[in-house]
Length: 360
Length: 184
Image 1 (cartoon, rainbow over the protein chains, first blue to last red):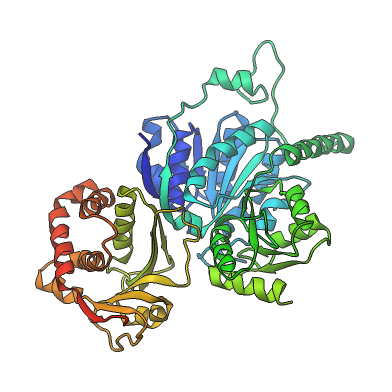
Image 2 (cartoon, rainbow over the protein chains, first blue to last red):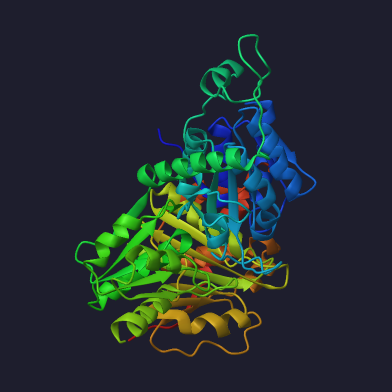
């Protein structure tokens, strides 16, 4: 029988991590995501699956513990919210530079600075454009339900190890704090040392007689070597862009206008689509599930069909830039969204659609 | 069937847990549900509210700007949410501490003096279950057996001995709710 539970998004992340056979979680509490570690501490997975759960002394320590665990080929993760994720940016660029797989969850709150504890989507740039230095990318998944919060933990680890790259789950205070029905997956065992050695031969599992040393580092003082490494990274990102784009389409077939929204904003906009259609406005919604890689081709397809696009995000306008780049002037693209911790209502989105695209 | 509800009052009144029990009752009845708190730096005495949606179909937005039912438990919430009830919708309120009673004529209004009743029953902590009972009398969307199952799921096991008392409070709420005015 299906096991259905009513859970917060944050709790779902924790439960899914234990069930997916994750080896370690290192974190530091911050609203609105503290339930992730609270749930892990209450479940005590170190007594059952052997998963390590550790409250670090800071976010900087957390991400560096992740670096250490990932270097050994372990499936390790952390979670935080905006100000904490800013502190992790140095660690993230080092992880990307050392080609280490890991999962980082950001339950976004309003900024800038210490900001507010209410939900926001203003960390889009930081996540998809590289919040740290250097030419690197984070594969970025944007869950829009508590079920996806649970499901994406495993998806994120699969992608992280497939590409040896950090993966960001970019959530927000709405999805983190709301409760919905969740169907949890079966328990999977943690990877054995033999499995790691066989499938991830780069990991520092201890030098064997028949191979050289494995070295995990992001430093390369010779510029030509560093350039070649950067080319390798860029090739990897091209592969990611070619094969890992995920999106959902809602009533797009006959759409004359297109809303683009992700995460909790996509949930709100789904209602806006229903309300607008009741008024006779033919609008559809494209929900990017991966923010990097971005559904460029899909947007280009709709640029030939619709009269205008509205990017609806809880930010001052970040994803809208990627929408504009994708359609390259083919159709008018506008932005709407409340921000700084305020959340737009379904009705406000319909008004914006009418004012910015239809009336204009 | 879709029911969009806001429950609003003071922190400490059990607003969020009432919403959780209602949502869990919906899960027990195989409905789609969502529970979205207006979370914040809130504490006992501050305002607290939660949006609960029960539906036969997949739920789109967990955040709403109008509601089928508003359950209002203090004056600040009355000022904020009376206007957000859909025409033809329902407003249920506790008269305790209310200085400006609801005035709309295009919605159904009910009153449940749950604070008073909880004090009379010497069980102030069952206040929210009295309100829940009143709500379920007006909108019997979930069966009582599923509410009890929802209570069991929501309460930690060490509190399960309190379930009969909560059940009594739910019954009491159903009995004391009064019709104030109905839409013609």
